[in-house]
Amino acid sequence: MKLFTGSSNKTLAANIANYLDIDLGKSVLERFSDGEIHFYVDENIRGEDVFVIQSGAYDANFHLFELFIMIDAMKRASAERITAVIPYYAYARQDWKDRPRVPLTARLVADLLEAAGANRVLTMDLHSPQIQGFFSIPVDNLMAQGVLAKHVKSLGLNDLMIISPDAGGVGRAKWFAKLVNADLGIIDKRRPQPNIAKVFNVIGDVKNHDVVILDDMVDTAGTLVLSTEALQKEGAKRVFAACTHPILSGDAISRINNSSLKKLIVTNTIPLKKNAKECDNIVVLSVAGLFGEAIRRIHKGQSVSSLFT
Image 1: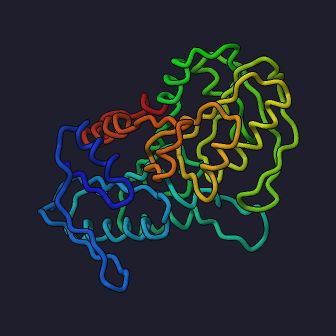
Image 2: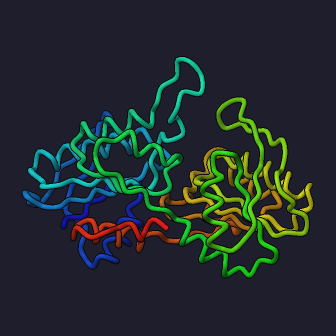
Image 3: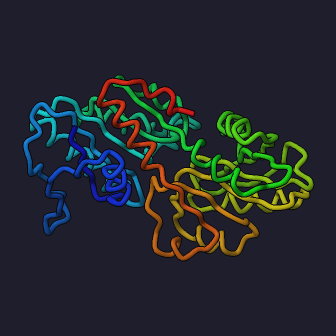
């Protein structure tokens, strides 16, 4: 087994390597003066089972192309199998035609990964599980709910209620509510344009409940803050949030700091920006062990199905 990393999340890659008790593979990843990516593998990988760790964090365009180049190099170096380990799958939000003349970027990224030479994909909490159907190669979609649920249980919340921020996330929230033995609620919202949401109704009685908003990602935090306000207007006691991917772009941190959200619980699929690290309301949980175990089982040809809970 050989484990390599791109530039997007070196800390997570190092933690995964520590879990597996192996060293990261030797490679050179740099840029030419005009910004083009220069990469080469600095060791023999002929016939090896190769795993490439790269998340779509922040500069998604650059990191995705970096991943394509790394996979291409490893394919040409005669690796036996190449697994793209993508903790956060970028461009997943455009996965269906919600209006005429729009792209399906989630499908486009899948096609590009296969064209580059990936034989398998390992990811976490896809925006929509159906994205797995865009691939003709095996895809393992790990879930962070187990890691998040363990932390939520440790908070000792009273009359806990799990809230899905939209209808599309009900399945995810329903499963999480079962893990923490809580009731389920839904927020009815509309999104007139990207990164702008409007809350309409809260479905479920949240009065005097501690609530946890569960989502796969938090981007600008606009929806999260609006949801927090709507829940408090309906009588929620304390509002927490658990989101797998902490994109936290734009004014997200200031929105969170100025809101009444008690805690935002995230994972390290994406490294936090500097200003986010200084936010006391954010708790980061590691998923390195989960990815490490999945990689170990894939390499040994063992079942990974027990990790999907």
